[in-house]
Amino acid sequence: MDSMLKDLPVRSKDSFSRLKETPSHAGHAKGCILSSAAHSQQRFYQYVPTKEFPSEQVIVTEKTNILLRYLQQQWDKKSAQQAAAAAAAAAASSSVSGSSSSAHGSHKRDFDPNDGSQRGSLRKRSRLDHHHPGPSNNH
Image 1 (tube, rainbow, N blue to C red):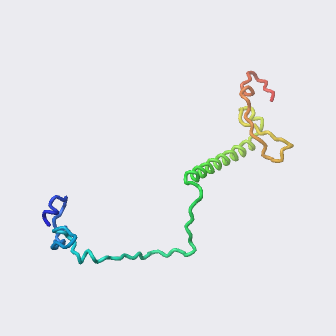
Image 2 (cartoon, rainbow, N blue to C red):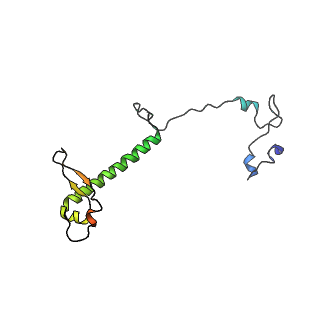
Image 3 (cartoon, one colour):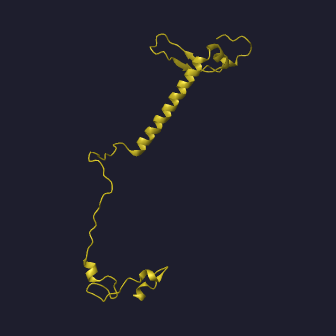
């Protein structure tokens, strides 16, 4: 037994004090640790659940790829943030009068009477409109 374990890395030799060397048996090499009686006994393990899960709980796999789901979630978050920013900008531009916003060159709100929506569209002023030299600005 000592010859078999002598080259193995061990911190404590007492760790192997309970192992007993058995005489050789058919099919085993001389000095084998397992006896034929111990080898023939089989242990059967049984799983005992520690949690009760409801019987109606069903595991369902997603049809879409995890990457596609992640990208869709990121797109939804981004579009929700953009919608919130647009709503905040619309609220800010509606509280500011039209003359002061045109003087600063910010977004101007257009209203189309033929359009059914009351929101209208946001239009950027052209660069030439707010870079005119001189006091007369006809908009």
